[in-house]
Length: 285
Image 1 (tube, rainbow, N blue to C red):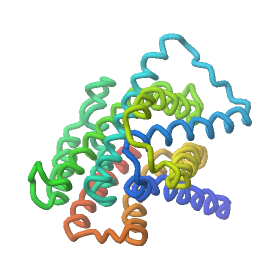
Image 2 (cartoon, one colour):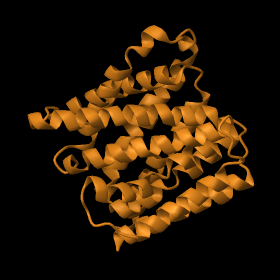
Image 3 (cartoon, rainbow, N blue to C red):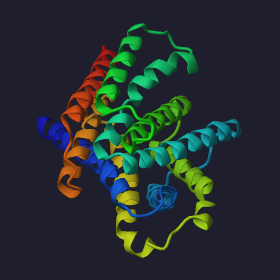
């Protein structure tokens, strides 16, 4: 039993590592952000379709009234991915990933409003801690600074991701996670299709290997493995292990992009991840 748990933990860590590659790949791929996300989505849709057909999973939407929330969730998914990649390109991997990882506390603050659950005053404190962490991350608040713009894009991306999760939360029990992901990437592909006709794709030939990595390993395999891990671990354990994403991302950025994080990044990042850890621990209790 212990060996099985260690094996499952190992594969969860592998999944988190794969998802973490989005930071380095998003910053490295030399294409317009909207083009990157379109190829990420359409290729991931192909991979997921083949996988789900192989599993003989039903791809039909169960009720007609679910089309609208799925579409809205897809819109927020598109906004989340596009603004996250802008955050990476404008700042760096560390700042982009850490500003995005404010989303768990944003969910905690928005949940009482959207899902009408009981408001918990301690979430206000967590919100303040996140703001302090973001303030420390920001070297100097100058709206013209690309790093500040990157952090703002990252926080906006976190809000979009939080809205997407809250919109789809009630459907998670009735659908395979990979099916929901398939719906999302199809919608994102449709929404961003016009970008192919208005943006520069001249560098596409040299970027194919990285786009395939982003679509297959990061999106299709990584996200599916994390969803699969919920069969063996609680949501609490999975969320705590997932908190390693910015850590893995920063380490990869050091080796592959030569991005050395500043002391402010370490301190602000620690405060953000510590707040996320405390909220996850409270959810377990």
